[in-house]
Image (cartoon, rainbow, N blue to C red; front, side):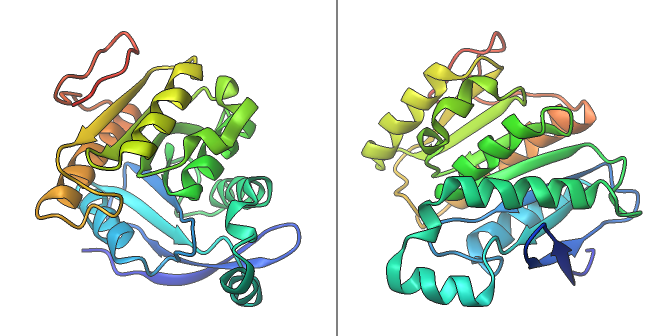
Length: 233
């Protein structure tokens, strides 16, 4: 398995810490956008990233806030909901990856969790030529607001079956998307997908979505509607 390399992603105003792993003969790259107080060390996202690397995709797990900003956010929770700021940094990381020898030219996808999902979708709207697919895990895509209809990247929204409020918010967001999309429900799962097998289901669906949209692999999600309609998996 490709080892992680700690890197710094330079944006317009700050340098963000990130972990980059590039398998041999990588066929694509997925940038992870965390939210709601999480970081690149999130065990859930790292598990998904490991699954993606097993399919030949490079992964980038980036902290969207600096150490000082994270400390301020822990005290105020304000920055984790600043979707404009987070999206700006995701877009900057997309630009950065396009300039790096190991990732330039690779088809790129975004994986967002919690408020990071809104940042990923907003960044996809700002970088339509660069972002080829988006996956949200237990996300708040509704927070991307007016940018949702501008998203051109096929989007998969994954929600736990017991996360009822977030299911509703995802379905509302999906209704405003004008691109191929699906809402997949993990039966019996709560918001953090801590139930046995739940996170494995997330990782499997994410891997399939990215494999299809980044590299042309088959797409066989349970209940998926290929005409762009929603699915409840």
